Image 1 (cartoon, rainbow, N blue to C red):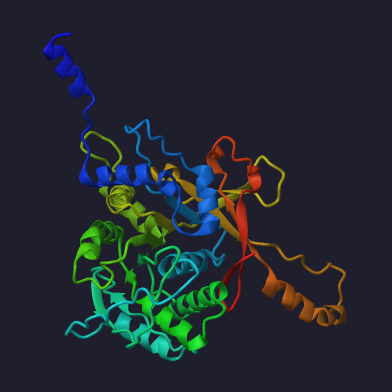
Image 2 (image 1 turned 90 degrees about the vertical axis):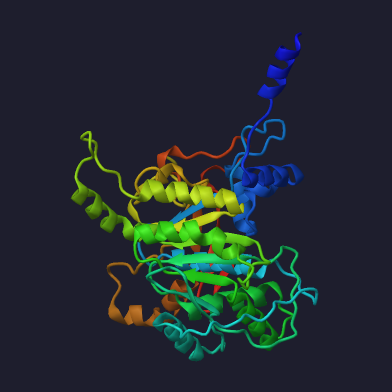
Length: 406
């Protein structure tokens, strides 16, 4: 073999990568299971069955961080509270705390807080947990507006799973009171030995690592997602020392009709082709930022219809998401959350009997669980050998205290 042939052969084995791709490869070589874990045990079990395993002998196919879609048969079905529960898992880390870490105080900018910050603070002042959100963002620009310094405390945290920071992108003002309740309930459930004042202080500190953005349009959402790496890698960011645990969007489908009207208003392209909306750009941006930060993406969507799957199992549903292509094939894992049905009164039940059963019925409704199942739309199947079948998923109870896995 000539030197030229040898050089050509060796050159053919060289593979160019961006720095983020190279670091992701090293991360997977060190821990091959990290591409199917986000730090939430119930979801990690599903991801292990529904994601492609990393093959160290095939470096030409590097798995990307998971992208999870959560939908439901209708509104008020628990999607937002399920997202809050995921945030609690990620921003607090797993159970087990000691005094090996503590967060530095945040610096407050000199400019005045906007109305969003004022509303959030006023809302938290009325909450019995006496907690406040520490970071708010301008709903027009999607940029941080104000940071409220956390209370001075010597409390330090340590977690088996390291606590992370969260980018939460919402289309309407988040319910800070409810988010705080879910964080506190999760913390006390995982560490029942904690005193209530200590738990509240830990939650208060954790809230400062939930960075809330409120883009007002699909274009603003794309721009905000694109700016997330620069924002979190800024040394002045109070969460710069934490890994970004997830980028959570609730919900990109809220921009669907505005995007559709805008697309129809543009008519056809130069060669008679129908003008595409901005959702393909959002999908490519999410994939790029997810790879750059090695962080999962979680988003909720509304659905247009619910159909029964081929299986006769009542727990299995298949819901068509509202978002256009390429979103139906974008997620690594697609989930549907629905509340378990409560059997109604018999049509022959009189008023007296109904009143006698009132307390029992109220209790049944209050304790009704929610099922989270893998969405079977478009014959989405699981990895061979998982064995979970059509019932893959888990159960949660959502009440005024918080979210509990059953």
